[in-house]
Length: 304
Image 1 (tube, one colour):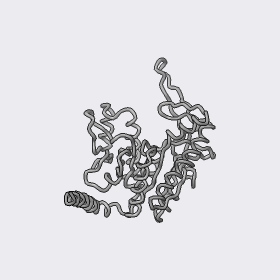
Image 2: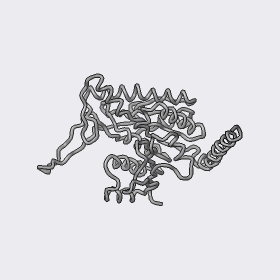
Image 3: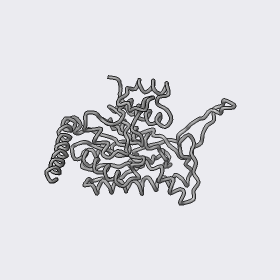
Image 4: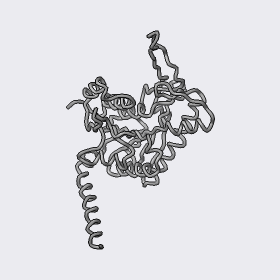
């Protein structure tokens, strides 16, 4: 029995040693590179996954990679609005944000959630600082303008989403300073207008814009799905920008996956080497994608 146990333990440690050995060329290739990671979905609500994510981010920093975390918080915002009895509605997947709502958005994103993530990273042995897009004018935003065609009259109607913003200018200087230190920045997607107005910015959009402004090597979008699936439900490991347009056209990519894929495409067009859609529910998903040959999500890049 003891001998069998020892053999099992030996095999486990051999697998661990092989994994470390396999990671070596990736460690060399990515040393000094910037990775922007959009953190959200169910992973944020799971304590064990949150602790795993924090350890992985600390590891990236310690091996010479510069991670920048941008987080969401839609469910937590919804819970706080409900507790405060503030009514909230969605139009085309975007939360209508009035004056009362934008105050709650900033409180939850820049306060509660941001500091929880910072504390987790610090507890895992890293050094982290929380920011919002308002700090150092990191995310200068403008009111998001959307139109919707009336199905009966065929007339375009302007939608008023309140203080929902879109990034118009990213000033990454403060993040570039952290790259030269041992500090890991954690960014809440709250933008500032040129008139001082606070805006609720979609976290995926904010993260992609930041990745582009930093010229990041990778933009990782952690979601609640394994990546882009083909029509048989199988993971597509890699796509070019041309592939993405084709698959949207034939409805292989549809629904909520379209904006996520388009965010990766936009980041790549801004200068990011590749965007990757990952399932944040998988423990150590970042390490599996970054430091192994096969990867684990869907990588989107320009054609070779």
